[in-house]
Image (cartoon, rainbow, N blue to C red):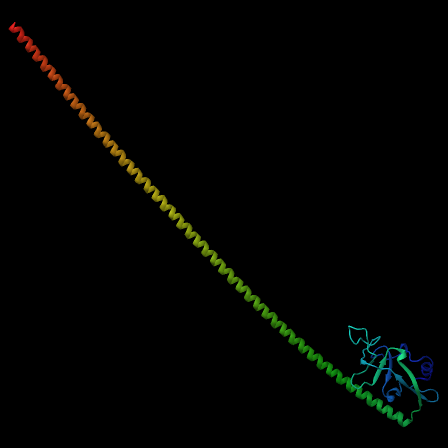
Length: 282
């Protein structure tokens, strides 16, 4: 805090629009430890090498973890419109509090101090140690990120393998379905052929039955024709017998007629003899 900023805070209060290093949201930042605020980057010495730190009263209330870019604390519950009162750098043992309303903090005390060379040396040593620790933490974080990325890559590879295996299983299932469909189609085709064969056999049997019926009808016609021929022959024989009877009757009639003539001739001869005898007697 510089002397100019100190005067502005005394007369205007804490104004969040002038904040810097907004890592946990766009609010006003308050450190738990004075040592943090007394660092070279925050407590800027004036011409007399005086530095200033403000002890403030802050309404932190219910807090949650802050994030870069926050304009206000998040909602406690989506079903209500109640938000948290502040955000922090870490939930376990927070060392930095951020409020988003200017009336949630006011300056209570101003601490003015100077730093000795030994203290500055210690601060510089601590800063270097802190930078080293921060670098180590950053390296560790990068290693962890790299390990996490490797783990994620392995997980992605495992998922890809699982996906490939699932796709292979799906393809195998599809191939089996296709084989089953082909087998069913072949069975249907074989059944259709069997039905066609059975129909052809049935048609052949029907044709054979018709042929047999036709042969039977021809046979019956032949039998009827034979019977007709036999009947015609019998009629012809009867007619021949009748003709013979008629001829026999005619011959008998002719014989009777010849006999009658002979009798008449005999009678006439007898009459002539009788007449001749009578003439002789006369």
